[in-house]
Each structure stands twice: as C-alpha cells, then as structure tokens.
Length: 211
View (spheres, one colour):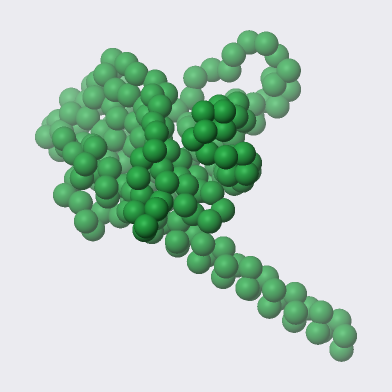
C-alpha cells in the first residue's frame, strides 16, 4: 500500500510539473506574439514572405554537437544557418549593462535547440510560409529562389525570427531577426527587449551579419 501511495504522489507531482511547463510555454508564446506583431507593424513593414516557424537557437555550435572532439581543434567550424548565443555573447551583454549576470546565466541555461514557436498570423496581412516550403524553394538548384518568390507571391524577400529567450520572470527577451533580399542582400540583427508597464520596448540591438 505504501508503494502505491508513492506511485500516486509521483504521478501527481509529474502532472503538476507538466501543467506548469505548459502554462509557461503558453505565456512565452503570448509575449512573443506581441513582440512579433509590433516588429511587423513598425520595423519590418515593407512586405516580406515570413517564415512561419521560428529558427532554432543553440548555445553551442551544431558542428561541435555532431563532432564533439572537434572542440579541441583550432580550425573554425563550417558556417551554419542556426542562431547561436555563446557564453562570450552573454558576457558581453553583461559588460555592456544590457542585462545583469543573473539574467544572463538563466537565459543561457534555458536555451533549447528543440524549441520552436509558430508565428501568430491572425493579426497580420503578411504572407507566411512554412520552413519546409521555403527550404524547397531555395534548395532547387535549377532556379533562383528569389525569382521563385516573386513568381509565387509577388514578393522578392523573406524574413525569419529566432525562437526567443526569456529571463525567469519574463521581463527580458532576446530575439534575432534576419531578412534576405538577394544573394548579396540582407542582414541579421539581434534585439534586446525589456517589458515595463505591460509593454515591450527595444533597449538595444546589434547587427550579427550584413550582406
């Protein structure tokens, strides 16, 4: 009988933990939706095909995940389309007083490369496209992907958002936005946001790449 009680208690605790995680994920999705809606109204409003799913984020280069022994080598890893936030990146944010050390440690530890959000399409007139479709357009070597976008959507550029990172109380957010407008046209920019009086404000941003 005692074992049965332990099993029941264990099931209840696991259920409570799962419900708590699910509720937290829904809250993050809601906050993310607010920020994306604001970005697409006020920053990236010129007309893009928008990738529906967020791009995954990593705290270690995917090359090193596949080849862990390579971390001891001195040569640089091959390029990747993934979003990577290293420890050095967070240390720089602390040094520049963008976030404090407690938030930096929490946000770095919370990075989950398996997590992805879907963008809320209900409040936007933009054209949204699934990642698989976008990948197929640009993996076709027989055609120019940007010309295909024009032919299919009458739009010659596309926009992607990374999966956001939050601090523990959901008052700080880091998100990377990338737009692509040609083989040698585009930019990646990481944004740092703070929530005050129920409103998200951009406190800083940094270019990650430009072409």
